[in-house]
Image (cartoon, rainbow, N blue to C red; front, side, top):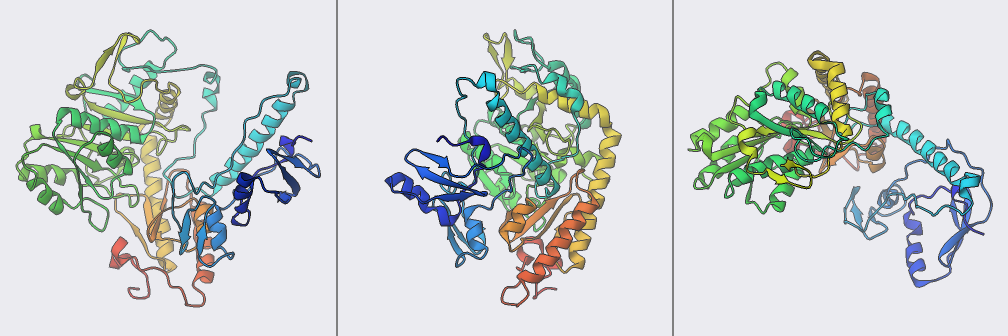
Length: 520
């Protein structure tokens, strides 16, 4: 009989079932496979359910560990092979694109001929969405490693979801398409223009689809202004900066960083002097991805000037994905301002602001944008954006939040984040866990947990021997306490017998912040 899709929850195959793929390809007989209390017999080109299971639309599908992780947690010898061949050694999963896929798949199936009368398909989809919503609620409770503010309520905007709102082309020039939100978009851009101190008549910008697009656009403007320019970026810049260099076939020079993650301006000067004959295009980080370090913009400008680069021979793009919106509200923080010789600033809208869909803001000088802008007769507008069609809902969400919170509301949230970040760092240090917190940051860096299951449970971002927690407005003391308490409990088992020691992080976060056996 055909499989009842509503009665089955499909999960990724564990390593013990990896031979299933080979059996399917060879057409071999496949033994019955148990799935969440069901036994599914694999047939040629399909499956059938042996016993029928009760359908619970509110059931939570527990997020499974990737095959490689399951292998490490007591089922292997420390070297695991994922379904597609991705190897894992010493708890670190190797990523092989298109091969070690470990995600679930909700297949799309054609509705039955009589479905509009029975309503079975609608009932099935309602159940899937109910389970998915409950999963989201559960996963949001343990969300610490990525810089997303999950504390928002946009219920008032639900009435607009019935419209296909598309901001085609230039935000300041209406096209023939009338279902747009340009009036909201320009309002948001004006707000950020005031924040970054540039007159309305002097700037151009737009609402992007993500922070990466802001970097792609800012660097593209720099490349158009200086076609033979060299892109300089610190080694701890976001990967999208180096993606831009590859996409635009730009010469890119990576600059060393200090232990904090901030750009090393001594090394920067050496590299500038070695290429004095070409203009400089610089990516300045207003908060690095892993350590939350803020490049000293004033020192970057001073270094350029001391190296013989006049203001008409360099272009600075400021990547302020997260901290670009926090910095203006931090006392003693260096200003990101167009009163300084910078070319563009970008910030993410789905991070500190708390927009439910990825988006961002990109602002540059009006003088620069003419190098990109082109007339588009089809739109009856001009276009200097990266994408053609742009999400018209995102500006409305941003406009709504900026109006509700305002400068004072954001200032309170910034202070809360910094205060809670210091609290987290203090708790980790009290427990003897290596940790670092940059002065102007809410990103707490600490030793990478030994167990990948713990990393996935708390959705931590890791790099080498370090992990981090990004303290956002949606992260309170109670959640931080729960995280630290569980980490302390886990460490007591990971390092109990002394055969494995916590890693030394002196190279990553400095001797003063390292609590390993050698430096504590």
